[in-house]
Image 1 (spheres, one colour):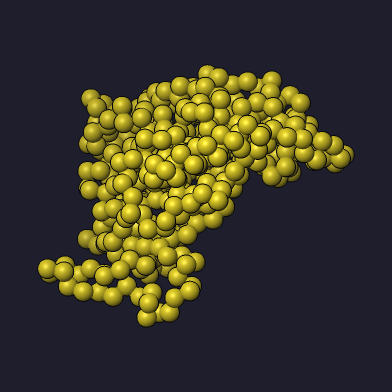
Image 2 (tube, one colour):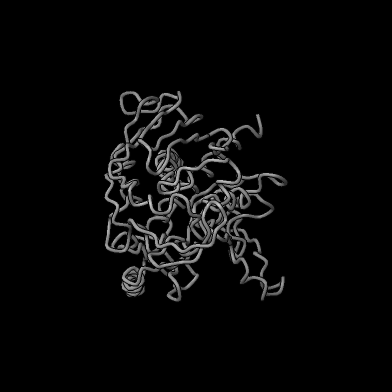
Length: 358
């Protein structure tokens, strides 16, 4: 089982949804970085379950405990170990489905691959494992902040409710003002009301998270294997429930001619820039200094509180109805996870770039 992500900056994570806890070890984190523990915890709080009426009712404090790699408020360069203890598991909610394969979950494929599975909340395949990503991503953000790189994600679509694709139209300071994490107050209210309605029905809904990376230097990424958009796509598609990744103009650009799509260069007071940014800040797999922006589509949560047809572990047709506490929509809690994976990827490729020339 692959449980590590990254090359130089590398996270190895462990833990299950209903186990004792979720944790990880981070290698390759630069020394001397000031570690703001309050910031790290705030990032976890943005991902925490039970934070609003449109998220799961599971109530976890998700307090991170660092075990190594930090001394007198700064990183030492040695491995950073951490753990978040699970406090509010209700494993009994899964007793009725322990011998049943839940539709569109990892139950069936996991069982066939490994011959054993932890049916309590999905075990290792649960989105609760993303706790470790958010911790590592928060540390990566602290390092990137020192070199002027910022990463901001927000909910840009829930079901049929969607924002304009031009992120420059929105005030990012408004993102955290609503449970939906949407910068448009009117659309945010529509999203919250819609998700609440879906939750009452026992159903779920999907949508899109948009992410913008500002201040990225020229030169990150590789021209063949390791293209920056490819590794960002790999990072995003590793998140639970992610179904599609699109950067720059993406599919919208297919409607344009090359003469309309090309980002022409010009000299801006001695600095070479582009007049447009259809490329999404990446050309030839390498960052060009413009904003990097992309969108990640998330499917509706597979667990619905309705009766569904399925089969048991012996292949016998049966029906099931899930119990427990589940998100009606992953989008609000996926926002900090998208940011975390982007931060980890950008920091890793920033460090890799430092090995390019003497």
